[in-house]
Image (cartoon, rainbow, N blue to C red; front, side):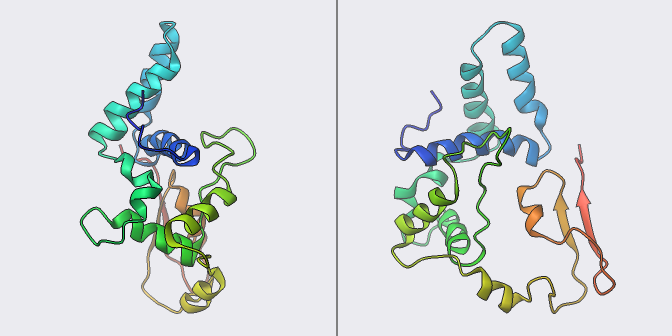
Length: 184
């Protein structure tokens, strides 16, 4: 139905479904998601079918996402190719930053099954035993909230889930941050 049969781990499939929805908002195209769902609801059509169509036509189609991005079996492949960026990103998440996109307690498009345990299991499954995010070392190395740098501009999209891991207020020693609201 979603052209994602290769995702055999339930959490991988649920992560894929949630990312499809949030991507429309994160990249400034909420109408790409909302319009077909509202139209389907008003026409009495099945909303799951409408969402599956959105996923295939927008997320996998015009946006260009790949189901393989979410496939832990593929993420285990250590060959460096033009398709290995996802593995490199997950390695950074699993060893340095641990900024896992988990579902908030209420009203989330993310399943509660995509929790911290899911992410830690993904890290262990893809990279092996002993892989655990060392956030303290990362903060020490980069300066944590006291970054030793100058002439840095922190840009954050208003709908970007990563903005909460970035600077969001000015301080006397670092005045340059900006949140970019929808640009379309």
